[in-house]
Length: 374
Ligand code: ADP
Ligand code: MG
Image (cartoon, rainbow, N blue to C red; front, top):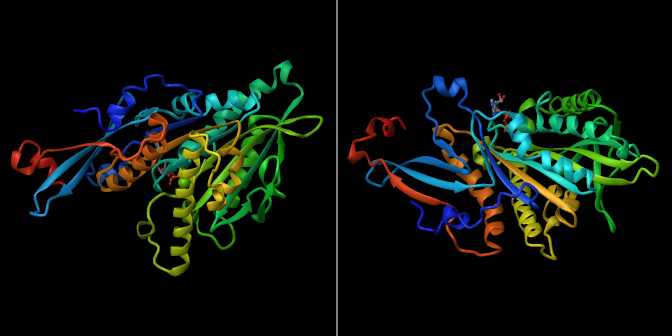
């Protein structure tokens, strides 16, 4: 169906799927939950290789229903049966290699609340951070790396304020540092010697994330959590490489987060601002731009060193497959597509974000039973 104009057309010319590319944009579709199945919700997202099609239920002005199909292509698309291990191999694993080459690498999970960000990135026992740690400690034990050690830091950005999750949510400040970009001053770092140790320190910090004094559990969807593994020279304690795992705040718009009072609306505005700034910074990184707009939000400010110099970024956009979330799913995919778009085209503007086609018109009757379910 592609006429060579939309995403599919553009990407047909970009055939090398380079795992070591500076920026990779991947999508992971989670399975329908048992609740969604129980409610009779439908799976609207279909994966075929690196292609993803999302069917959006729509209604015309004359009230007839139809389905609009949106197609996208990404560096990787993980279907709902993929495991964290599958995702890890094709996303964070190359970043572990890069860490030992002395690079700065960042792996983000972006998506609406409930789409699988935490499950993918920071699940306490099988998140990508654990799978990466397993490989990191294997490498660390080899003789040529005996001069190296691993430190871990874990903090969160909530309402534009940094909190150290490994130090009783102590407020922290980002400070510009000529050589290294920006440092989070006073961030507590623990030396870690094995995977179990890392998981223990993580669990301690994760607990501070969701059960802090004035915070309800649900608030973790309103904060960005940043877990970083720093490779240091054992003797001099200088940082050699850094790998960060970031579980971003929910990408849904304010009204959908149930933000009714002024305080939570301001939180929402802060989140939107930081996610927009993130997109701009990743794009600037890709274009090797002189000016990276990292000062636009606290999130991009603390990630400055991930946007300049030796750096690699892997974004995992997580999506919910069910029909009642298809609008959020499309917003997530459009965001991911914009991050990727300039990579494929080297800066061209004005193309449609995706291929779309309409079908299943009610009057055709063929799938009328399905469409009337929405
Ligand atoms: P988010 O962090 O984006 O708000 P979660 O990671 O908490 O979302 O996921 C929401 C729910 O869906 C959780 O119960 C989680 O266990 C489940 N889930 C998410 N992704 C998957 C997946 N790929 N396979 C199975 N269950 C998943
Ligand atoms: Mg979460």
